[in-house]
Length: 534
Image (tube, rainbow, N blue to C red; front, side, top):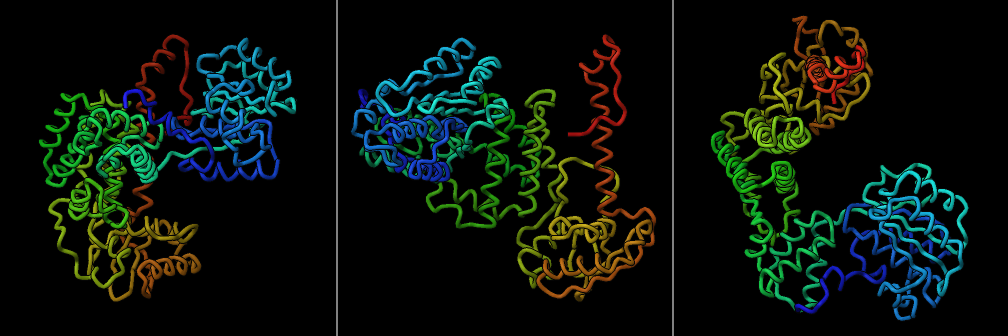
């Protein structure tokens, strides 16, 4: 085994049929080759290890195979075998990360003027092309505008945003997707079966998730796992190898959150710091776990029977409401976006956990469900349950409206977010509060300052139709003017949040060290009205 090539190299696909995933790119290139509709420049974008360079080399074989231009190169002719071994003189590969200067590009382009030595086309594969200097791009542009007929360019990058538009416009672009854990798992299983290496299925699941969409990373991790496990890919040993990245602490966090145990949350965070677990990736992993719990709640069959954490996922799916999972997912995502703004990563991480705790409903009973919801469809029952509103930041004013009299505590803000309404119907809904909902009659109190909407029959009919569709039973909408002038409507809450964010943005800008230095040293002035929250 020690003398064998690494798996990523040994099992690198040699034709389109062997590729795992990227069917949309393969189909497009296959059609182009079959119909001889070839472009002079191609751009492959995507994260590392998803197949950009591999597809480029297969395409080079398809162009130069001695059997002719074909989507199924023979793999045995001199052109195919030399490309596979990296010895084909008319395939020139350049790593732009280490050849950024214009002189390197000019030398390459000068060689492009000469006819191929042995192949049909000269193929230039330029990896990480976004690393080229501005002058190097300009030099390339001249050749891309008037390319020799015998030259094909294949550019690859993980960061297409850094490529000049003038270059992008002269290339056929293909975006390669990250590979799914299921697809990676299946490919790893195939490779290990061909290598006659015993394995546990749970270990493949762990590696497939740890690879984060990269087949190359998955195969590299599998090489490590084989060595670490002394020839057998054992789930327990792989779990230890990957981190000693046992993500059990994520489940512990959610259990503490469910129990309202703030001290427990901080203890876990302190332990993470001692174990040198990075907090930014931890928030990403927490969001991923919440996503899997949401799947377990809504599409249980999406969690395979051999999923190592299936039991724990299903337990948490029962302990949290779908609304709590959705809210905590949003808080985790926002927390990750804001972690660079925190005093330090520990503070940003723990504040995110405390925010989840602050918005957890108090004394919620999982087994009890309001009687009025049992006769409703599952979608409607979700909104009727008493839930906390999905807001990632606390807002002391205006306060939430009181529960609605009737058979259930129906939250108008929560329901409105799930209704399919637009235009004036949406404005009508946003500027109203729910007065009561019983016996199929839903009574809205319209804010007095928007009483003109009371005469808009079309908006009322559309809103009534949306409510009827949502609850899957006839709903009669009744509109009346609210008594109080300062009634707290969804629109009022939305406006208050907008103003709060605007004030926070203005305060942050005014306190920004760079801004204050620019004002003091350069006489710079803030343009009123130009500050926008992000």
